[in-house]
Length: 90
Image 1 (cartoon, helix red, strand yellow):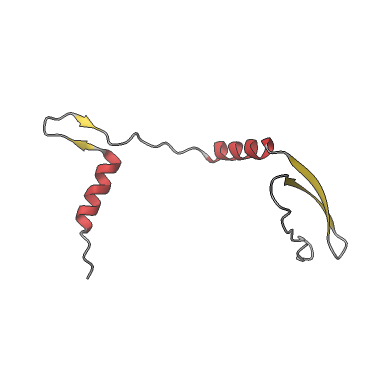
Image 2 (cartoon, rainbow, N blue to C red):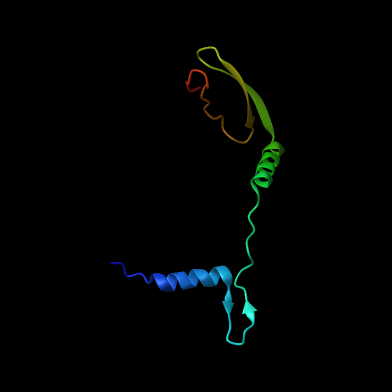
């Protein structure tokens, strides 16, 4: 058996999520409610962040002869690429 009091933990989590109510009846929230962004908003935010970084278009040629253009941010070291057709790492 564990020495954890799950009832007490549940009560603490409930208080952090919903706040507490005093004896007088006035409600005091412990934290503002968090709103979740939609996937479309998150995708738009990510594309704007990537577009704002200075990047270079690199032509990657595989050992077997396949070619592909890749946009690489300037600040990152050159990553390894994997060919989609032959599955070799360059």
